[in-house]
Length: 141
View (cartoon, helix red, strand yellow):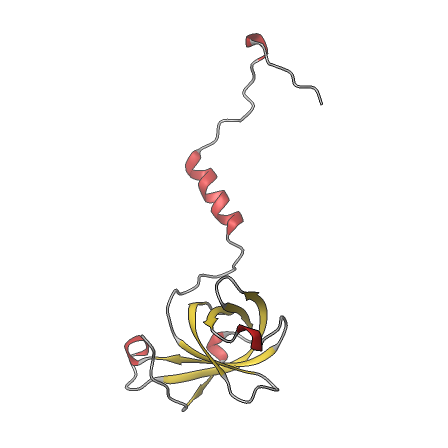
């Protein structure tokens, strides 16, 4: 490999002039692969799948219309692509209802994050189509 030093008369503008604000916007768009915004809120969650004797409890880190990241201690209970039933517990201070209620629907594990002790799930149908359950749970702090 040959290294060549540019002489003053050979100087070129190797980096075209760019509007730095626009460049920042482009990098943000490239870095963000999600199609929609996620809400950073901690909701209690239960994850159930065939073969589990008890549902695994966790806490959301963020939730969007098509998926969520859920922290849980029993990460070993799940594998990539597991089909699950997810229940999110929505507290009164968030919903405006009198009591906490559950939203339940099918989802799939799309990422296991050992460093964050959690799982990323993709909803099999949009969150707004999850069924409301009477299964109430106290929202954890």
